[in-house]
Image (tube, rainbow, N blue to C red; front, side, top):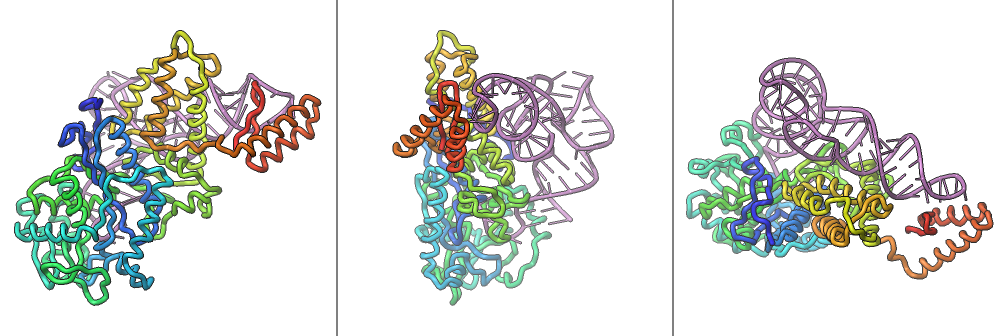
Length: 489
RNA sequence: GGUUCCAUGGCCGAGUGGCUAGGCAGCGCUCUGCAAAAGCGUCUACUUCGGUUCGAAUCCGAAUGGAACCUCCA
């Protein structure tokens, strides 16, 4: 089923495309950093998860048995790097006078809701940081035992300098530690650490901190990077295949994960690091902290000065698939509008393919075309190229419908199943059904079409145009074709 | 300031040392009572300056502009 050694992926760690060979034959372990649930997800967040959803879908499509783990960070994500740093969730809870788990629940639900609208498949395991405090404490203990962390005032810090003596801190992000030393800004109140690069594995909870747990070092809470190490190791093992996340997490988050894993187990945790690029707005990355964001609801409803109208999540997903996951993509009304037209063209083609009649001969090499589609996806999930091939197929479909090309029964079948598989299964682009309108509406519109037909026969253009124009007002588009009139809602 | 990445036609956005990307818009055509919708065809490229090469938008160097990370962020 799986064609061996065909898939290549761009490994951020090596900076090269590499042939994908999983640790365990036919199985893939994939971990993707999920959100910190202290606010609503924005479209930039969504893009990353949509990218990895596509990757997950393609791996499954190829026949791999994939275990996809994506965490929810619901504790420990610090606001800043100072000693009395508060974590994001505790801060939000304090400000809104809510129980931290209320915040967590609220934004977790929002997160799931948005991803469902974008037609993402839920991960196989979605562990939470608060559900894995014990595992995190155990890893911190191991790191201390191995001499790569130190305790001070009830907090545990990772000793980056010590680690760097026998390892390479910076191997993922291409940083070298001397640069980090000389370029780190000195922040207030971080005197506790031996070096500014050291990061917290465990933080002592101060009196304002709402989320805290008992530990060998007293009441506290886990550091940001630790939960991913704990959970990926627990569910995927000490070395697994794919670790994904947004480009912005490469440093320090993923760098620290590697350091924690190596310090704890001595093993390289990840074979292939995949990083999805940013979605920008007005040329700048979307960011909660700067307020340069667009929320999914604003996109869907068009309730924002940035857009002329709302766009269906499937259209937005298609828009994202038109760019490669490793490229920066800029979000704009014009680009979305263009994609919406293209999306419609693609869907029309898919609709038309089932109504074609086969001939004895094919004028188009469908097998070669399918091969090109797989080549595109095998080349680091190049959905952009895939889509260009899909439009070639749409053209052929239209030509066959127009008797300007022909396909055999087998080719027709192959073309139909392939284009649907790539669009619906692999890219996860939903068809916004246009003909699911209630039979009552269909009856009424068909009645009006009949009346208009009579009017046209009688050359009563005034009435005929009135029917057409007033239906248009209601967003019902009449389409006069050779074989009569149809409509789309 | 340090590290890394990017610069493609009106717009979005791929890609390869020589062979059409694709989508949108524009233009032409088909269809039509006129339109719309749809379909078909088609034009406009590779930031600048050097270098390597038989040949570079594609490789190397520099300049300019932009972005990400270096502090939390997908």
